[in-house]
Image: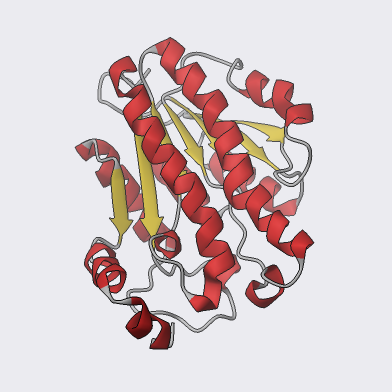
Length: 254
């Protein structure tokens, strides 16, 4: 449970090697010395770096192996156990995501299904488990890192956008289902963020750094928001794009 000052005491982060997730965790660790973090991600250098960053900030870190592309049911016991390592969980951050090769993804079934696994199937699977745990507690927050790409899919990244949209819609439904149980569910829709995933791509307007998104996440949690856009002006941009007739939308170079 949050401490007397409203600061997080225990968080579970799924996909903790995400640059945005790392920025958010670092922010929370700076706010409260001794923050407990359970980090579910693939083992490797990036996870070790994330854990080391948090340890340097006096956080208590536990790493749990999770492969979003593997058999999730076979990993279920490991995911469930991640919630049993301490006291109540204040926040679950689901930060799973893969951009993939967008041209390959609509021509190669295996590439398309990889995006389904990482961007939709795994977040939904984990979300169901996390929802039940938080519901039993009667408090806590569940946060999904989604994307503006799912608001209206574009030719340039429709495979990514479509798979992100699936999890986005599911979590917005969870927000309604869990509200009577005192659980706050929030969907985060960042625009272009400067991360390893977007390295080499042309930078889009309103581009941000991971720390900017982490700040918006905290503001959204404080406000009790169900959906936030990062930056907030992306909401206006995407509303305009969504309202365009299809023949005009298809001609846009996006």
